[in-house]
Image (tube, rainbow, N blue to C red; front, side, top):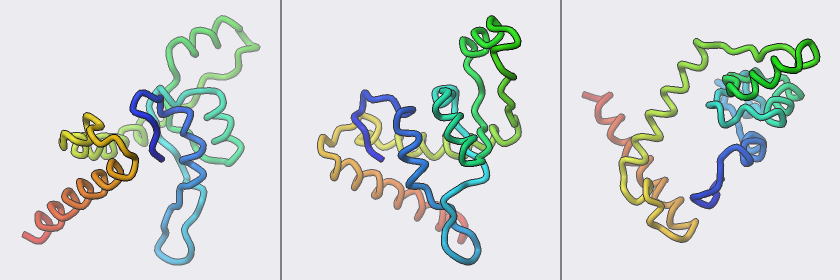
Length: 139
């Protein structure tokens, strides 16, 4: 889902999650992943409530200001957020892919002004990365 370059990603979290399809070995793709990993920017109450409602494990660390406010409220502040550190480490794979995509200047700088040309650039860069990995795997 493409947004304006200056727009934050977190407000688009739920709409993107609704479009998500997880392929399995057989059958139609599932619309509910087992877990969703994100950085602290996705740590809002709304995002966590949505994941809880859909029975999806949230692998999102708690912001320090949220933890402080929760502690200030005492027993009424709720329980600390659970966090699976091992699953969170797997975010590294996604972060490396984003770095590879942004290594192409047109994507990193949002040089293309129209959404269609920007998405076309993303597809082209992703294809280049994919072909490079295929060649590397064949040798």
